[in-house]
Structures are given as C-alpha cells and as structure tokens.
Length: 284
Ligand SMILES: Nc1ncnc2c1ncn2[C@@H]1O[C@H](COP(=O)(O)OP(=O)(O)OP(=O)(O)O)[C@@H](O)[C@H]1O
Ligand SMILES: [Mg+2]
Image 1 (cartoon, rainbow, N blue to C red):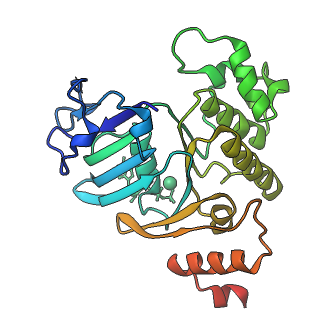
Image 2 (image 1 turned 90 degrees about the vertical axis):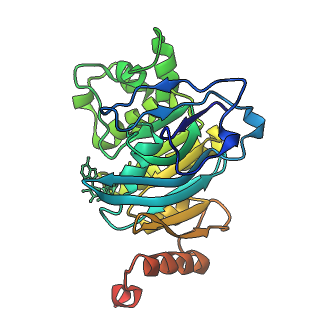
Image 3 (image 1 turned 60 degrees about the vertical axis):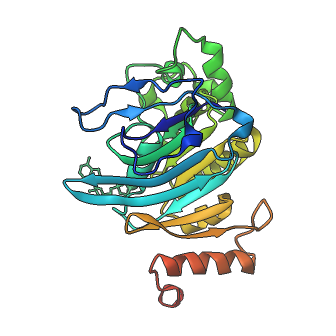
C-alpha cells in the first residue's frame, strides 16, 4: 500500500520511519501562500506499514483558534472506524485533512496514496452523465466499462447513462460511492454519507457500505451523527471532543449486528452518555 505523508517542513513530531533515504522526499508547494509547505514521502514497503492511517500531533487552527489540537489517531489496514462528536467539533476538518484537501496543518499525517472520499451531498457534476461522474478526476482516459463495474457494485449500472438530476437521493449517493470505489481505495473516507437519506434508503445504504467494506477490505473512516449506525458498522467507534479523540471503544459484537441485542443497546447507551445525551430522559 503506497503512502502519503503530509507534514510541515518543521514537523512537531519527527518520525524517521515515515521517510526513506532511498526516496528523497519531494517538497511540493503549499496550497496557501508560503505558510504550509508539505512533504510527501513516496511509498515505504507496504507489508511494513502497520497502519492505514497514522496521525500524530495534528493541529489545525482557524483564525488562531485550534479546532484540532495535538490529535493522535491510528487506523489499521482494513479496519472500519466510526467518528462521532458534537456539531462543530472538527470531524469534517479531520476528514478533509486525511483526504489531502486541507494541508494547512501542523503535525504528521500518514495516509494511503489510494484514498477516496464521499460527502453528505453526492457532489455530482450535473452536465456529466453518471458514468462520466464516476470517472471524474481519474488519470488517463479510463473506459466506461470501469465506471460500470463500480456502478454495478452499488446496484446502479442501469443508470450509467442517466443525467444526475434524474437520480433519486439514494441513487445519487450510490453514484458518489461508485466514484469513490472506482479509485480502488485503501482508505475510504465517508462524511455523513447517509445524512440526507430517508430512513429506509439509509438502512439499505448502510448495508451496502458494510458489504462493500467486507468485499473490498479497505480501511474506512465514517463520520456520522448516528450512534446506532456507528455501532452497526464499525470495528471501533471514536468520539471527538476539544480537538482530540476523547474516547474510543472497540465493538466486538459479531456481524451482522442485531440492534435488539442487549449488548448493542449497552454500547449505544455508553456512547450516547459520552456524547452528553441523557439516555434516561431519551427513554422517558
Ligand atoms: N474554512 C474554515 N474557516 C473557518 N472556520 C472553519 C473552516 N472550516 C471549519 N471551520 C470551523 O471549524 C469548526 C469545525 O468544523 P467542522 O466542519 O470540522 O465540524 P464538524 O464536526 O464536521 O461539524 P458537523 O457535525 O456540524 O458537520 C467549526 O467551528 C467551523 O466553523
Ligand atoms: Mg461535518
């Protein structure tokens, strides 16, 4: 698995394991003026990589206010991790950093080179047919068949030639997932991908993501507000607060998970408590 390292020129935390004398790290110009040049180190040996994601000492501030503050996070290859936290705590900011969309950071971020992201809004280009949207941004001239294979995986190959505006919300979200899958990611980043779907479509989409993850074996980081969704899908659930991962719990329940299982309810209640939701009041 090829890896990217995003870190400032003077990293807060030096980690010699992330560089390689055999591959001098090229310095890319910063996306914003002079403030944040970053080093991308080419792949180290995949077998030696113990993590799909390794984040250390990560800080991201807006207008002098740290939203992420000395955060540490590791995700194993193939692990499904869900990220919860109150609105505005920095979940999307973290996800955008992992996706390489925000590099104005301090600290070290090591992610697979092959990563893909899907957001709450499907973000399809209305002037491109569905299959062209799926291939958007891929290098070279990929063939339609490639898009159709990914669309088939999400049950949407019959809408390959459709215009985005003719898709339902659930279909558009599946097209967005196909666009992520076509990149064969080692890391799939999902930012509330089911947030705008109705309850039934949401359940179907959750199942689909669970199946895709098991089939593909990529690491997944799913940002969600839905505690039940997190417990249903994840190997590990994290709660973000005050700019760090404030709490985490491993979900050892066998799959497929049963939401009526008392152990499921126990984990759910514990997480709700960590999120400051009064479950007694909720039940009343
Ligand atoms: N580009 C930006 N400029 C200034 N402030 C920003 C920017 N992006 C995010 N923020 C601020 O950083 C904080 C964290 O935002 P973020 O979008 O990461 O929250 P979140 O945890 O994803 O919230 P939600 O659950 O509501 O999606 C918020 O206070 C937000 O206003
Ligand atoms: Mg968000």
